[in-house]
Length: 364
Ligand code: P1T
Image (tube, rainbow, N blue to C red; front, side, top):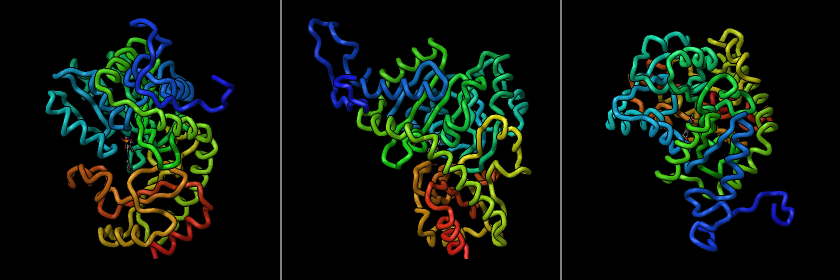
């Protein structure tokens, strides 16, 4: 690093001087490449145990780049419980371009096989899923996919590379909303991809540059700073997540608690095998499943901020049916468990006694 700077500088430049046409120092134009972005892309590839990293202006832009690998007539098999924005991109944009999406339950990886045909090009997995915390077996899915020459992409936003390394488990592409745990401080919107295969990376770099949804240098700096503390933040997110999940499970007004650390939780053993710990995301429903009562709970919370998003050091609460997953039709979201009383918590790194006291007063 120039001058021995410990932190990578923010190269706030759109372009780079050339001595003669093509005579540059590796950087021509910041849509194509920028040194701060390059530093982050290398760091993200490293923590995901991959060879090539790419960052984008948002998580959605990163997913968009993946779908641009496909052509009309191609088919995608996706988990049926996933971030509402991913569902919206697939159904409201790419279905119109002739790409077909199958949304299926993936709690048993063998379910996928029945939907594979000669047009299937991509399997889209989120695990743990947003917001139902379903666990999908990445290794078993990759073994099915490998028999068919299909790409397996894993949205690793909820788990982060601290807890789960999809490429090591056989995935071809790992995707992140870096807005969440990677950034970690709710001050940046960004997406990221990491892959091993060189040809796949080159195609994605081509799409990144051609479509242009890149991340800016200042934001890259913030995520570079964020990932320095990812491991210690995640340890505390997991510790607090466990305490909150156990508190909710013991509460007489709570019906269901969705947190993969419970021993009787569906696919708990898969979570235990493919994740280092169970994360800081916890969802729950109240007895009676009343929409208005759920709204009252999120309104009464004081330490948990009612807001979209997750993964920052401060605790957030959301009501998926009216917020993050409102773009999924009611009957579809209810089939996957996103009922009216579902509340999703992103458990932060505050004092856990304060968090539990806040939930206690809000649930009443
Ligand atoms: O918001 P953006 O950085 O574009 O990332 C989209 C995205 C992709 N994948 C998952 C699993 C996500 O959770 C998100 C964004 N999610 C929220 C904003 C939310 O509150 O769930």
